Amino acid sequence: NAATLEDTVRRLRLGERATLAQAMTLVESNHPRHQPLSTQLLDAIMPFTGNALRLGITGTPGAGKSTFLEAFGMLLIHHGLRVAVIAVDPSSPVSGGSILGDKTRMTELARAESAFIRPVPSSGHLGGASQRARELMLLCEAAGFDVAIVETVGVGQSETEVAGMVDCFISLQIAGGGDDLQGIKKGLMEMADLVVINKDDGENHISVAIARHMYESALHILRRKYDEWQPRVLTCSALEKRGIEEVWQAITDFKTCLTVSGRLEKVRQQQAVDWLHQQAEEEALHLLFARADFDRYFQQTLQAVKNNDLSPRTGLRHISEFIQHHYFQ
Ligand code: GDP
Image (tube, rainbow, N blue to C red; front, side, top):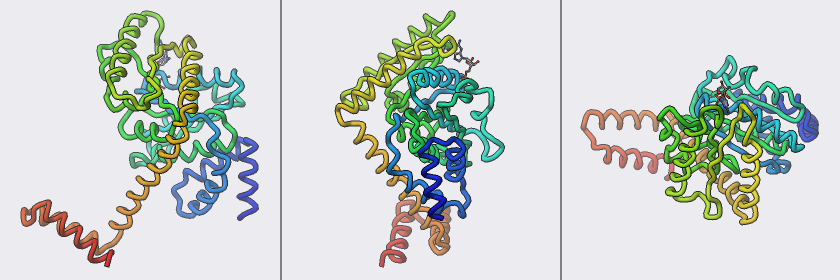
């Protein structure tokens, strides 16, 4: 009811951890019974969102994401900031917990009063987990966190989705092994605002320097994401906690640059619009295929195309005519 909702929002805004965790569980729930309440909650917190710096970080398993986030998160806390980490794991099963939720990850940060870590297991279909990460991030903002970080493994769709919900997108890379070029996936480089090459320690210095040069060259060739920002390549050792402050400095430079130009506000607006656009398309398709008459006609047409009785183009025309005749008359 309204009183409980109001109370939840009040407690959330006080930064109460238990309330934040409960609110996250509610928002994550797929149960239809929870939908009205979670929608109400998200609506109610909307005025209190938008105040955090939103960071996305991606990297292959073993690149050092958790080691980096541990060092980075502790540095931010040292600067007096409150940090939330939302760890999206597209590879983990629906239930039974998340690999990223493993207790051994980010142990120091997990214990810190000013930090909050939340693993998001996959919902079974691609995109589900990262879509929910967006809403969890909003809850963290309402709870007063200064920096909200969405972490994801560098595979498939999740990278693009995370890039579409943050202010600054960081690609964590490692050098060496002769597979340096793997990191220079065109799409990924075009999304990255910063490239951070980790494990710049021990005997890795030379391979890291070579990799750095390669990434810098690649970034100079590619078309810029924003006119006012040339993506930077940095190196660090998360293990030895070196170069972490420089990463934070580059992030604040990026933020200042995009704030001054007015770009950050526009980017956030566009992200919200893109989100609605994409969800609306999915919803429309879902509603269409939920109609038995359409589904039957669609299957018949597919079969006809399969049998070579219809060309795909004519099949498409039939489906289009069916939709127009049945639903738009
Ligand atoms: P994640 O899978 O991306 O989260 O990677 P982890 O943070 O779990 O790190 C994978 C392995 O790389 C672990 O054995 C870490 O100790 C190691 N590692 C992480 N950062 C560094 C680093 O800066 N230097 C070195 N030498 N090893 C690192």
